[in-house]
Amino acid sequence: MANENENIKIVENATCTFCGCVCDDMELHVDLNEKRITKAKNACVLGRAWFAEHTIEDAPAAMIDGEEVSVDEAIEEAAQTLVNAKFPITYGLSDTTCEAQRQAVAISDYIKGNIDTTTSVCHGPSGLAFQGVGESTSTLGEVKNRADLVIYWGGNPAESHPRHFGRYAVTPKGMFTPNGKKDRTVVLVDVRKTKSAPVADIFIKPIPGKDFEVLWALRALVKGSKLSSNIEEETGVPLETLSDLAERMKNCRFGVLFFGMGLTMTRGRHFNSGALLALATDLNEYTHFVAKPVRGHGNVTGADNVVSWQTGYPFGVNFSRGYPRFNPGEFTTVDTLSNGDADAALIIASDPGSNFPKKAIEHLKNIPVITLDTKNTDTTKLSHVAFRTATYGINTTGTVYRMDDVPITLRSAFDSPFPDDETILTSIKKRVHELVLAKHYAGGASGEAKVAAINPL
Amino acid sequence: MTDKMMLIPGRSSKQGTSLNKGKLKDEYKEVTSTLEMNKDDMDKRGLVDGDKVRMWNEIGETIVSCIGKKPEDLSTGLLFIPYGPPSSQLMASDTAGTGMPLSKHMMVEIEKVK
Image 1 (cartoon, rainbow over the protein chains, first blue to last red):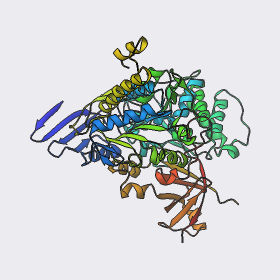
Image 2: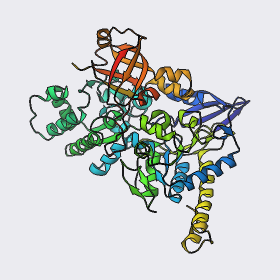
Image 3: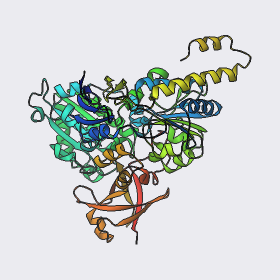
């Protein structure tokens, strides 16, 4: 609830959407005169920067080719661009609300385009592994209350998810872990000794690119198979270390494997994630064991959920045949750009112009790009149409999903003069729908088109 | 002996805080242009903290500054850089049918910029 005190507003139980931890215990102090958050109690170093730096910047709400225009003009140009493209792509979506994500899926459906999210360059390989292997899962609340063996694999939460340790998995006192960290064994597996290492009771450093082999060796040990004596030479991990870990896994009460980009972005990709998920599944013959991907952006998990319940698939979806098809490697955005397929792009709350492979960035520079972002980025710089938007969870309400698929409602701290993603995308969707109908039913809508016109997505 | 090293781009605290200020600002550019390198590997190449190095592979090249890390923290042959525009210059676009480029497994060569 908000309390008025002169020009300072206190927002309790606000949510930080910087990373996938989506901590919803923030106490925000908001200077309403300055329209900025002056204090974010309970926030980590990343959260403090997130709240402090998202102020109202002096910038146009909309631009076409670098020139200021009205939002309505930009919406018209965006809709025309998307409808006139042969292979329009939509990408991003991990830093916006589920309500906005839903509108983006509808636009992609109407224009028979392609929709993909930052998941494809994050835990996309894990998404493939989930489909192939399955997922033994839990909420972070269960981890807090029950886990006595916590393994982080291929990640550095101390720098990427600073409160993961303190709020969810290592130090909090839970129902069956009343002494916090004393009741848990923490293991870190990584090719670098990062700032997360001091938290771990056991640190294991495999040879880079050998995660799959280490995981498969653990599967063998868990099942009681003997390993070749050269396993250390192969993986960099001594047999006794692996044997000790396998025994700890089998004998814990509740184990969890948190895994990160060290598995999905390296040699092996989905095989790495699949091996880890298979290991967790194997361990359920002996005890309770779960595996959870540690998700990066604030609502990347929501993007997976929304795209899944709207299309049946989590990312890399194409509507060109009028129904959704899923094909990573073809309909994922690095591929649609690098292969030169895309001829227009709608980029929402994401910066592929900075973070994508060079070849993909080069193609992005050669096609009309529409961006929605809260700040200037390399992608907004190369955009044909650029919208400046309100920041989700600071200027807007809405729904986001925590990395364990728990939905959380956001609280707004102060108003923004810029429209939010959902508002802009809803307007683009309506105009796109009109243009599509006009294009295909020039003589007037009939039959199914009439129904569609009455019941827009 | 090959001079190729494995580059691992990733998140760092400073990269995370500076991107909130703005990805076109100097602080973010500096953070994402600072390469962490095993001190022994630096010694072999006559590098000291702050030196500029050219880093390249078959995809592209970039120039960054380097700082040393203890060998027990960063093994020989490994490089770490907070991800951003410089590391993207070296990333191959092939996703092997997954959608995911090998973003943390880039083989690169480096040399001191004189």
